[in-house]
Length: 326
Image (cartoon, rainbow, N blue to C red; front, side, top):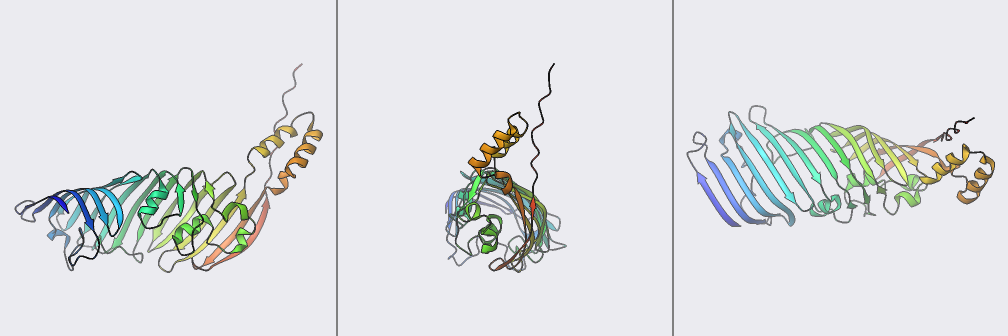
C-alpha cells in the first residue's frame, strides 16, 4: 500500500469518515486482517463510517483490477453507495447501491462498458475463453445479507447484454461454465455433429444481445440472440445458478450470406434457369441447407442432456420481378 489515509472521527454525526488516496494497493489474500471493504461480523450498516476512497492501481488476489473510486455514507438505518467506478484499459464498471439495515439486504445497480471482453475475462481469471468483443452489460441486483455476502440463493434482479463482434475460443471443460453454454462448445456431440465447423473450434459472433431476469438464483431469458456470419442462435429458458443446471430451448439457423442474395437475384431475372443451374453446381444447392435446427438442453452444466426436437425448412423469398416499362 502506498498513499495517504485520513480519519475524520466527528463527521456524519459521529460515525466518522475514512478518506484514502492510494497510488497502489496490492492485496494478496494472505493477510490476517479483513480485506478492504469487507464488513466485520454482525456489523450494522448504520455503524459503518462514510468512505471516500481512490486507488490508482488495485491488485486483488492476483487479479489486476485497475483504478477504483468508491464513495458512500450512512443514511438512517442504511449505508448508501453513492458511487462506484472501476476502470482499466479493457473496460469500466459504474454503479451505485444501498445496504439496507432493516431488511438486511443489498441492492446494487451496475453498468459495465466493455472495450475488450476477452481481456476483461482474463483479468477475472478466465483467460483464453473469448477473443475481442465490446459492448455493455447492465445489472440491477438484490440479495439478502451484506454486500460481501453475495449469494445465488437469494439473488434477484435483471440483466441486459449487448455486445459487438468477437469470438468464443476453444476452451477446456469446466472453465467458464456459463460461457460454455453461450458458446455451445460444452454441449455433447449431438449438436456439434450438425455444426462441426461452426462451434467446435470457436464460434465467431457479430452481436450478442438479450435480457434476463433473476429469481432466487434462477435466471430466465426469452430473447437471447447470438448472431454470427455462419449461424444465428436463439436461446430461451432457464439457467439455475444454485445447482448449475439448465432447461433451455436453442434454435440454430445456419446463414449463407451472399450466396442466398445471389440466388434470389437470379430467381427474378429472365435467365432464371441458367442462373439456378450455375448456382446449384457451384454452391451445391444452398437453399437445401437453409434449415433451422431446434434442441432442448437440460441437466447439469458439466453433463448436459441435449435432445434434437426438430428441423424446420426456412423459405427464402425470391427477389421481386422488375417492373416492365413500355
